[in-house]
Length: 384
Ligand SMILES: *Cc1c(COP(=O)(O)O)cnc(C)c1O
Image (cartoon, rainbow, N blue to C red):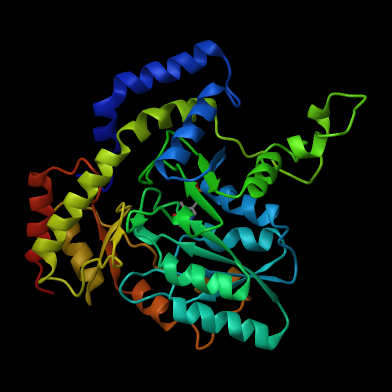
């Protein structure tokens, strides 16, 4: 049994993917080929966002808006600690400081009340300047964007949705980009929308942010606005207007993603059906099953439950051939290298408690009922 069975999806669309990859190889436009633009347009449409830009991975996707907004030493960026390290990692790249915020005990996503208390504490202390909030759609479910975006507006902060696990999630039918100034995602193979290697994207409704990020991902190349009304002795292609980086989505990966996006809505439905079935059969047997925010639809990157005897349950399941995983055993602020950065007032007791109790069961859109029954029976037969 697989924790995430990527080959099951491949079996469904292998012919299409093989043909799409071969076409890119034969066309020879390996960097920024036409498939990249096509995929970006489809992604923007899928999530009802004005601009989508492919980039090299979901980590650099978070760096791009921070760079576009000129985040620098002395700036504070508020983010959860109960997440994959990449969320907080990009902030020190720019010399800025992450400020770690606790989570809601039911959704595992950023706690808006603690966010606001953290912003106020940083303002009162006066050492750092609050600039950006990075909310995470952990395990695939949308963060509380209505509440978080209201706090961002009130304090004049930008909001990034780190939707590496959550691309496709919604609240009352609206994607995170409805609230966030930028939405980032990852196409790491195991994410809900994954490619066959590394890849990422950043989305925004703001024209200027999009134009600057497009420049930054190609070494700070001149944008249309940079060039307008000026004349050049040399090809402006080689004008570098800002310190950028090389962060592009490969054409081959874009071609693969076009085929995967075509079945993504159907897969999200399947994931929700499977999650509902887990909930129905496990709710009475574990300390907690996932709780999704009111009006929210998760894309179920993970199906995560809690148990007082997590190690015992994991060992029991392993004995029955059921793979499990713990996301995340160490909150970022508990890692030595991150311990120098500030925490919101009162610390992060919920993040620390959850790190000891959560575990995830196999979850992917092609988990058939027989296999799921095996998993459910295995959990229900644990008496530890
Ligand atoms: C996977 C992940 C990232 C980073 O994506 P990569 O493509 O691996 O760089 C960032 N944030 C979260 C929450 C993730 O799960």
